[in-house]
Image (cartoon, rainbow, N blue to C red; front, side):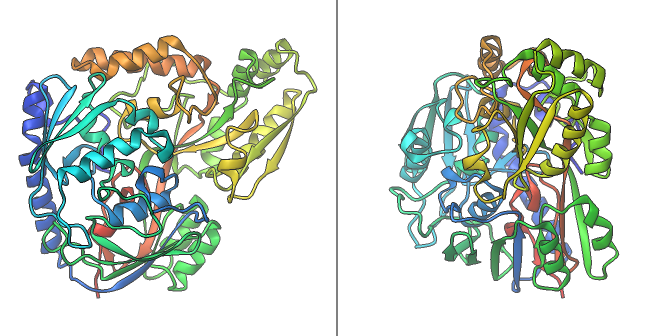
Length: 523
């Protein structure tokens, strides 16, 4: 993986101002895109070919609305059809997309210059009105946006020229260019409300969308990146059973899959014609203890369960080493804001037993909900159940089918498992899942000091002070938040060896859900 834990943008290392950094964004990003394209051309990509791709889940809740995307299959579908103002590179830095530049003096008022000559799939030109509409609809609760807590930072968006938009935030946030690369911020056409079909500016146009069945996309010959994309057609499906995904690929029915179980890696690597792509990431499956329910809101119970997470065993028995040890803090070691000063919490059933008795929970029977929808949570739950039994707590593992788990179980019962995809910035991670008033605050944890630090860190342009704030916030999560995080999971994809152009984008599997723009079939 190319993502170094200490990597910074060169301009920041050189001590340039934030405005200078953002002014250099267009030229640097354009150079990166050109270089990447030149490398690809040297390797001989060709236009043509069809592939079938399977992600980990599909249901009738599948959507063409990027604001409402909730699963990897949604994100992949959306990046095929739509484009964002910015795009992620392999270090999760922002490079130009529909915006050629984004500038700000104060990280509050941002001026966005739009790319000329971009067309939607129906031939209509991209205008500032499309951008204004796309961003403001994220703030409307009626939209059902998955990033409502983040979009609420946007105070106003308005057109200020034929190819210019100004975004005013309610408070400074130096991460805005990176945030805008997230799939939920992709640009839809002005007035779009009926998402039974989709019209975007992305590399592929939507030919057929059948929720829970498939998405069929065809190459956009008028894509704003000359020469791209390469594939003529992509069919995207969801297959929840991992062994079925692997078997279908090895039988030739699929050319690309994500969510590969570590137990399948050796089998795939030993099969002629197939390869594995593995990327360390910030993905984690966590034990969620609701703070608005008994007994999971008892601090002693929360700490006891954290001591009963046998992280080393989970790392080896569940992930076979295809993961990185975690410590009940959601920022992975690959992040430059990772706090290394928190002592590693060790498996300690004696402490767990003592804390459970202190909480008055000896011999208590409690249900714990797990599902294949939360990656490897059923296996983790089995190990937690064994540890809890040795500490005098009777946990019943209720295994729930993947379809319906997120809407019917997660955050609905006192003890469940979450599965949090990587986020490009620490602010997005904390704002979405840990800020007190966020609708996706998994455990319902409320910490006024954490919230205050979060707001301060957004506007802090001094790197050292900002890092210290994020360190302090991680310590608070580690100490008292109702989530236990045992490991950061490597992203494992597998594909036909003829599929070329693959490189890691550690925001998610399938090249950060962006494979469609970059890959080609080599005869």
